[in-house]
Figure 1 (cartoon, helix red, strand yellow):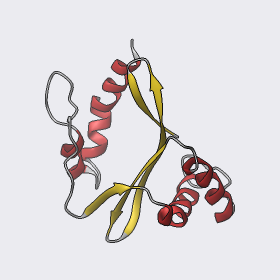
Figure 2 (tube, helix red, strand yellow):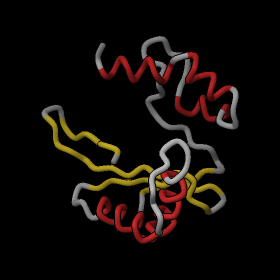
Figure 3 (cartoon, helix red, strand yellow):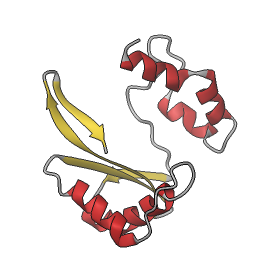
Figure 4 (tube, one colour):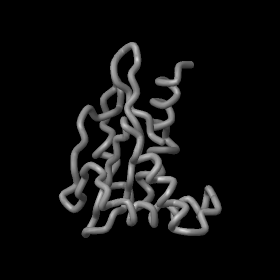
Length: 131
């Protein structure tokens, strides 16, 4: 089975769909997935009017570092990010990468989601890798 097929099956499985339908995320299922038999994935992102999606900026670093520390020190990861300086340094190294690309999502002016990664050249063009 190809990686693409595995990912598609993972995100369109009944268990994954059930997770969305039985949680506070149920309203977000339609933003990312639709019932198209050819791929079940939207080609464009539909934005919730209460969410602000934008590119990462250096001004976001401290808030992202705090969120990162809190999330990855808890279930299911239980990493040992004991200080804000540790997570700030880690994220700072990612951001300093010349091919860095990052996005944040704000809800009521608070960062609630972060996607940090980098672009990479490939024989088919540019790819984005989440770090």
